[in-house]
Length: 148
Image (spheres, one colour):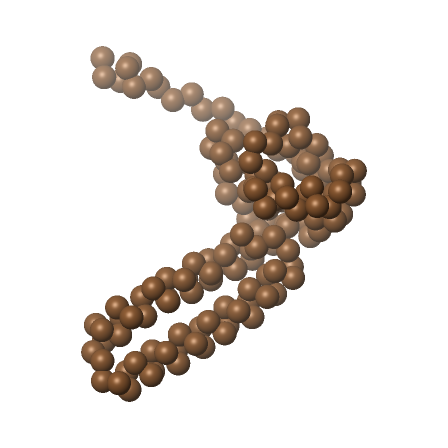
């Protein structure tokens, strides 16, 4: 996951380089006389990496636009906390200052996507980002009731 503007800029540069390298490799393979099927088998793993990397860049761009995924039973809360910081253009250093903790703590927490974060701590982070998180409860019918 891309967590800062500098990581994003580096990723965009690297993505461009990977795209160029992929095209050049494909052209060299074609020159050797390989069939399209053989070229595809060779290129697929490289292309898979490229597409995964491209998705990371696009995901960061969505976050910068303020587009977030919904949470399901608080799964993804850590990812959402990072996304909210990114969307607001708040650096890890600034968030640490607002939370009155060392920047390395925020960096470590984000690297682990706030795994095991308490609700109290998540609430402090939301407050530091001036975010109000609203929830909606949906009770699903019990499977036992459906099969009766």
